[in-house]
Length: 362
Image (cartoon, rainbow, N blue to C red; front, side, top):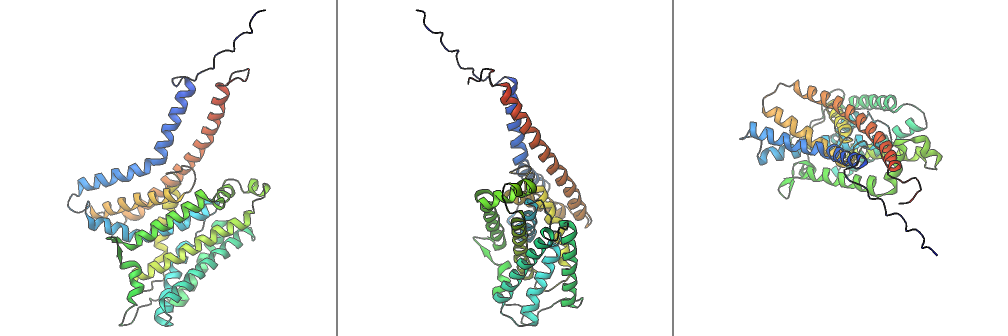
């Protein structure tokens, strides 16, 4: 009686084979896409430090960046949340202007205690966000048009409150505890930087570690498929807009503490930088999907670039030129990242088929 034939030895995957090279190239491409903006931030800092050794690589410059870029960073995070669900909130700039004017109106003209005024404004920002979500989802109006319409209405309310002028505090000024929300320091750094860090961590936990975040990403990826599997698309989209409105209300409070006077048109200056940061952030850390860490890195790139340009003595028109060009680059890179993810998924499937023996053995 002859012994049964021994089973064939397991097939080992050669890392130098074509599938192995493809996986290595994809891994390298993923690392470059995920951390390219972070590397770019370091390179920009190095270039400006070499070009401006006396002014740029200083603690004063660092404090200035952390302080002045805190509000754009908060607003970029506010813009990012609806983008996760595939929607856009163009009212955030108008909402920022209305929120900071309302805070100063309630404190200066109405005589409210500043904590109550801040709380009411943040609650009002949340209510506006809910309204935007309801109009988009239940009114079936495109988010661009809906939020542009509500933003225009908020701008009208801002002009009505200020009567086209500015809200200027009296001789006593604003309460010191209120202005300290922006002017104070913690651990030697401007306290607004810690607001941005706390907000980024909170959004990261929600979007990356909680089921709510996964549902929001599914809605943004394919709303119809999400509805078919039982995810309440309308509910989560309204929640995304409400979160955005809440963050905008907080940014308005911070802007009021910074400006210390009510300017009805100041919020519009923050609209374009916010979307540049949110869209450019979708190409970093988690390429192809909006994420808070990527948004923070994108804001850092913009902050370093704008600060260096300003210290080089560039003209005022270079700022909108920089923002506009970066926005086009961000949209292009975001589209490329999304297409690359689709190609990578298809390539992964073909590689798996190529390395699987015909008889199904490992």
